[in-house]
Length: 90
Image 1 (cartoon, one colour):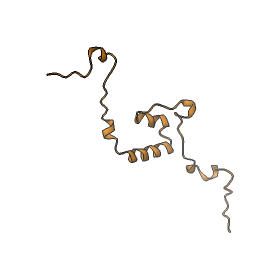
Image 2 (tube, one colour):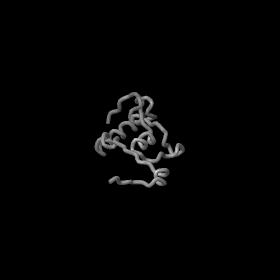
Image 3 (cartoon, one colour):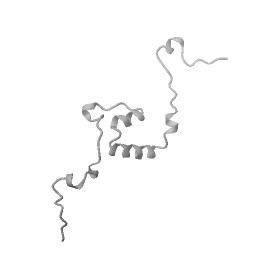
Image 4 (cartoon, one colour):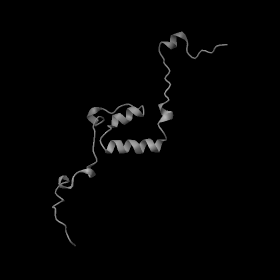
């Protein structure tokens, strides 16, 4: 006996996707830590991450496609007016 999941009419409207990537990508905490590192170091955008997690993309005007770098990693002389090049004593 053969079981049928979809009728012939439904087969025209629906499809089945087998995604084994979820089994290969590790636990939630490890993925989130990896994504945080990738995002902070500028080699993944929010939408890159969302695609991997099978989420809808953020609009470009909301910053979904921006590649950012962590401001803590700037050379000291470019960090703003707080650095004078001299050590201070208290």
